[in-house]
Image (cartoon, rainbow, N blue to C red):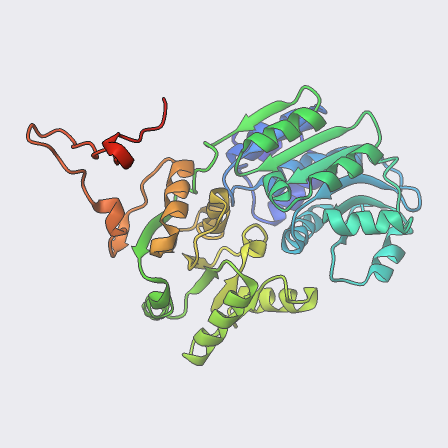
Length: 409
């Protein structure tokens, strides 16, 4: 389908899309929306930046609009769970545009914000609740809300929720929801554990996959620089200086490392900020807004930002430290080349990170082009060859008495 009007959405939603300049659905939207409107459970897989939020948000809002009455106090009709505060904020902001002017109410709850204010908001009931699992359970324990009337559940970026150890929280939450219900699971990557999650919580789901899991957006160019760990700061400064005025997102591995790097960049004259787990929610939101507005040109972040930044103007993503989880690389570089724009993903690989690089290439099914440097010597060293050109086997070690010591096959 090539037009939103052909998907069966309510006229009010079509008008909201038109006002935002959206006329043609993305592949994940055109394939997912009709199934969701039919009430099917779904597992949706698509690259980052391809409109997954609208793919589940539009048909969800359409169904809620048809109810026509306000929710009861302390109840939730639809629950959307996301792994990070930034992603909750992004989903909330995107969906707010579509419900504006309707009777539907959206509420968000995340850690690091006033739980008293969140309790007050939930006391009146809400149509759509966007939440992080931890804060949601805190509110449930305080009896600030009940999920007994929740008939829609969306798990966004479910693979990262599993990586962050939210599986036990998800089990608790799922047991509190109404039955029957419609459950939607969306992500950009697939792993075995997420497949098991889908089989547990989804009822005869339809699977919509518009790209191979692990595939980057088509307009992202990638490269890797082999560089010693101590030389990374200088290399980063050189590359940033070559693109003055452009927005750049730099990913590090640790909170302290990101903060230290941000201060080094700031001292070198770059307009830099940082977000990570040691920052309060208010600090993170202010920094992200400054980055979005262009007042900060370089944002240094841990993987907390890998799935919560939707800023079309990010021209470069730098993997200053390679992630321990290969799938996180896909989400990191998905912060650029959004909404059809071009973007570049640059990776730094020290000798100690060669294993992470090869894991990333395996997940993505590609060899990342080398921009500078060479892999470690032990990777490049060819096998020794015997007289006939065949690889020479290592001589078995001999123990006492001259006998070969070999492990039994």
